[in-house]
Length: 391
Image: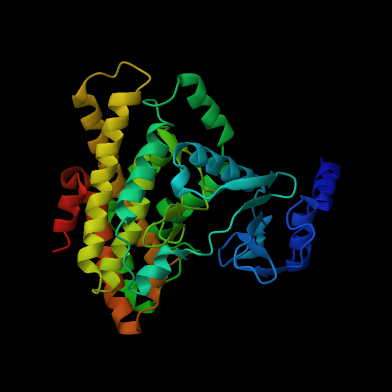
């Protein structure tokens, strides 16, 4: 077994700006052209390069998984399989919702490399919001992406055999373990992975000592581990969405797995909610996005159920009950995401870019609202009621 490990490590080679160009040219891209390459990745887990002919604005993107978490270093090893999971998930999105996912051109499992179309004409959504930009089609696009990707990989939209294939293909224990720990476990006790300002100590101690909260978080964690409802993106936040005024592209599904539909719904809504806690310039627009994502998702999911359901689930009351259940789950996830992004390992620029006193004030509100979401999700039930709780 040790010999196999040595051989695998010898075969794998992290790319550099120079070797990324060579790698593409060996595949037949830009073969007779002088190219330039820059590393553009600012994420936590991977190398990302843009390669383009000199003088051209458009090129190709090479993404390579590292065998460890880039944000921490080699002390946190990670499987390279996540690159194949991301590639396979994106290929499914290419089939189901091609307008809202980057096109995959090549994938090399041994080198954990994926070559995809260049989206550098777009901007990361989180950055755009911080710069006070508006995106009139955002909610429509995200709602459609969620409805189609989740419906067609659920028991409503695929056969039992294909559903089992998805569970096998997207068996992703390493990254699911990261999510379980960072979202559902570490923020709720004194874990060494947590990172927070001393000014929040009283609020955090209260959170850690709340027995009712601990029980509800444990229930949500059990749902995360046991519900196998559809293929999830698994890390859908405003940093994994490229946008313009007319385009929306979902990227980075390396955390993809078959799990509870409410998880994807809750993660994106929580990351939009951070805008309401951190700035007021786009408040009305953000509220409209949050409401319309739920509306578009529900309407599209019902339409898909009516037109494409593979089983005789012919009672409308059933689909309405399931949709309400998805959003109850999502509200719990919203609470966990708000809390973990405030005091856990990975924060959000929306809040952390604020002046210190503003940041502390915002985080105190976020933590209080997160607890409210988790403990009251069954009575809140939908996003409209959730937003009313902000007032």
